[in-house]
Image (cartoon, rainbow, N blue to C red; front, side, top):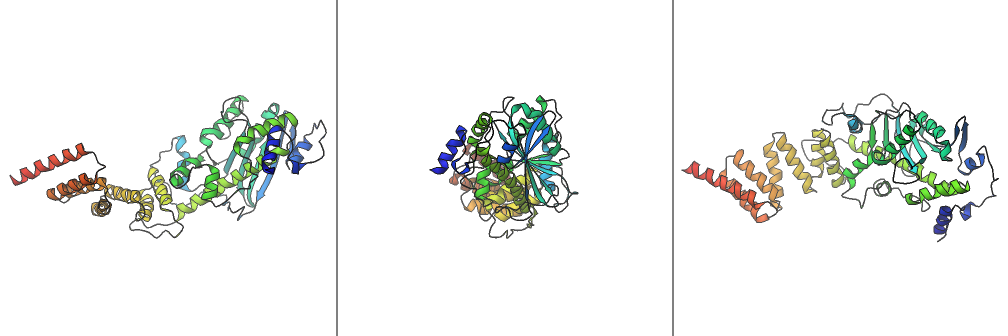
Length: 415
């Protein structure tokens, strides 16, 4: 109950009871009081004010998450991130073990005055995470009022300059378009123009949408990364109201949880990238079923295989399908599909036979094609079609056309 009351007070603009402190002076032209409430520093320049809070996370475990080193994106992730700039998905990347020189990968997350976007929505807090020799640095830039936005955006641009890639979660649909709109409104150059953007949300959906209730960052963090945030974590729906209350009261204490929420989001991004890159560096044999280990989830392996196939890494995709095929029929189907594409028809037929034995009508149809065109066994092809008809689930008009053609062929051969 006390947590709920604290949230209600924050939405109204009151300080939480356990944050009670002497009332600030009515006027604080240097913004030192507001900065102190947020454990931040105020930066005053000629055209405005912004606040900066810095958090350095050492290498190793951070709240159960492990920030990775500062080298560039895995080549496959880098290719996926570059596709929006016109890079073809099917061009092969360098070896997975290859790495470019240390690069500036930027992790970006915003807190805004609303979710509608457009020119009336401000990003009042932007978290920027970068790796360096000492670990992982998160700088959070806070906008103390709309009149200071140009100075605030200038400071943000300085931190984004020179990025080799930007990583976000749903940033392609929301964060980056919003930030770019604000830059454009102030006539400022976009520091991320042409920079590859790795939005982890579409990749998370490919990997985990079949095994999780949803793919929000909080759900992935809890269920995949094994991290549970504090009960005092500020829900995203409350964030705009807390900022608007701050603009009225100049009391920043209810925003402390918002900054912590933003910091946790940034750390979750680097932990998720670490998790995915670890999956990509696992060596699975493409020619035979693999033993991926007790922690491997067949749905996750299959989803990763689908993504690898989408970027043209067919050998790696086949290895991941292999690793999941004994537990997941869809993975076995994809193994057969890629084996057929590679001309390994006998190996593909072995998978279709196993699927057909489980009542898969599609597999019976593929076996009919294989028996007719590869083995010249018309009777065997007709038997497969009849078995597929008994399974159901296939279009009967297609089966009838195939059956009629095979009967005609058999009659000609016997005629």
